[in-house]
Length: 183
Image (tube, rainbow, N blue to C red; front, side):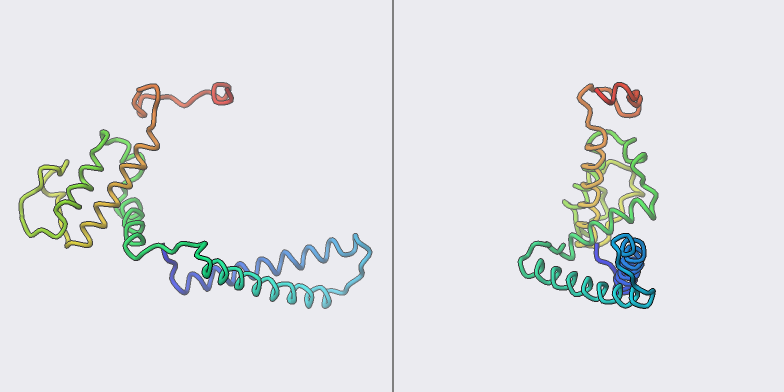
């Protein structure tokens, strides 16, 4: 998900400030151990120089990675799906515990219903829809696609959390004792 410009600025400023403080503290501690005497003013100047070098290094590496396509940016649609998944959890309260209460495939069927019927004007609830009529709320082609894919992700996450070679449902399994986990 994309950060706001203000959040990126805050993250960068905090990163630089923390780097400066660590550099200054390391110099004040280690230089005397190495027999190098430096005043606090000299340590501050050197920490500022190293901070500037670090900022340049970080910028140049980021540009290099972008040029080499090492970092793959997410498309706007993928960003919207991730944002929707977080919205489902954070604003709607559909926690992992809540999702784990559904039978296998329920969240996937809900996602499929949104995808298959994206943007349709029909007031009818699709037969794939696993819940009651009042929960069927189509909101336009792209929005329905985003919600459908986010629900499919929720289904995949639920599956991964509950993967179980024993066949015992997750809600009935007890955590393994410490000794059993080590084996």
